[in-house]
Length: 238
Image (cartoon, rainbow, N blue to C red):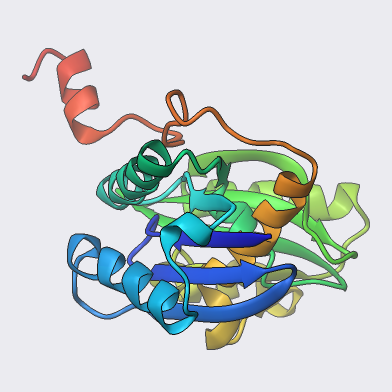
């Protein structure tokens, strides 16, 4: 069972190929170039170096958000194009769940954060006592202060004494989080901080094995909040 995973929900671009639970190849880029420049060449290299074509792939996996509106559209457009051209089934996975999957077998509350700009973060809360993350609350966009308040509430409710922060929403507010959370907070190391296509592939594999595919025609990004254009339209500004 070959799964091709494509992630472009954040500034990171990632592509991975998983075959029967074995990671064959992964590419990761977090440097300057746009996803429209990097993503398709990465897919081509991963397939070519693993000596297969897209027709040898059994399922496609893609991050569906939250994240960069443009990045999400690019990744979904690529995956939908491949799916419609080949008939390969598709699985969409939450970006925050993919990031949370960087942590496992931990008693800490796992808190993936994405930079939502406008003084907000996209966040979610997971338990990672087993191999796969288990969601403890719905995803949301909120201020760093609101995130901290909810994190402390969830920690109390689940008897957690520490929490792990990861994702690109951590760095802009690092000093604030340290001030508010103190020694309760642990930040992930660089190699675990950002979304990995290999984690996306493994999460998708479980759903593929259970026949839990998404409809390629209706699969859409999870933005959580309105785009700037939608917000302006609602206010009659455009």
